[in-house]
Amino acid sequence: MANGLPDPPCGLLTADAARSLVDSVDAFLFDCDGVIWKGDKLIEGVPEAMELLRKLGKKLVFVTNNSRKSRRQYSKKFKSLGLEVTEEEIFTSSFAAAMFLKLNHFPPEKKVYVVGEDGILEELKLAGFECFGGPEDGNKNIKLEADFYFEHDKSVGAVVVGLDQYFNYYKMQYARICISENPGCLFIATNRDPTGHMTSAQEWPGAGTMVAAVSCSVQKEPIVVGKPSSFLMDFLLKSFNLETSRMCMVGDRLDTDILFGQNTGCKTLLVLSGCTALPELLDASNKIHPDLYTYSVYDLVGLLQK
Image (cartoon, rainbow, N blue to C red; front, side, top):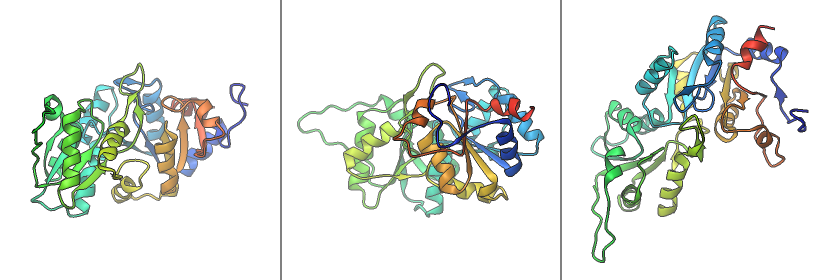
């Protein structure tokens, strides 16, 4: 029994289970929001857990669906919180969107329209693509008058939609008309997370809400490049000489983090410090079960030192 509730079809992390897990993997893949931090507040015990795992010779990688920042910007955020993490150890959905276009030989003469924030724009520019939109279009308005015709750039060959606190009707129409009227225009979503810990106080609408709005307007499903899609794993495997069976995905979401781990052959550890609460894990309707669950990454420290 866990907190008076029936036992879930997965194991609670114990001292023996923690030692067995650490012995069986070479790398830990960590989600960020709800696992490492909430908003700009570090979750208690994260530095100690990271330090211990590094001392044990484990590779640490950070895989986030949050597209608001680029890898460079995330590296700065880690540093501001007292954590030393390099850009090479960070894999974001904004980076995944840029790499998807690069691997699929997106025509250099085509442009990318962004419904999202600076992280997507920066990663696209670093990959050599011409892009526009983002926060700059957050202040643009339209007037729905009788003869109003919405102009758009006919050279847009892809629309990338991610988390966007500046989302508005103008952006939705620009994305809709590019996808609908520009021949062959790609519709790419960084992820479909419905909510996320944008602040330490509460959850907020996630990228999935913006993606759903655009998807509904064009009556078309996007190409999703973030978790639980296995697309990011290809880059992990190219960057680090590791087997997926020797990796453990640590996350707070069942439908993204845990499913990503399962889809790619990783071991999975759910932490209850973010979006998923114990009743949700135990609910009979839940069909996604991690290998193990615990309350926060800090539990690893206490359990491994027993």
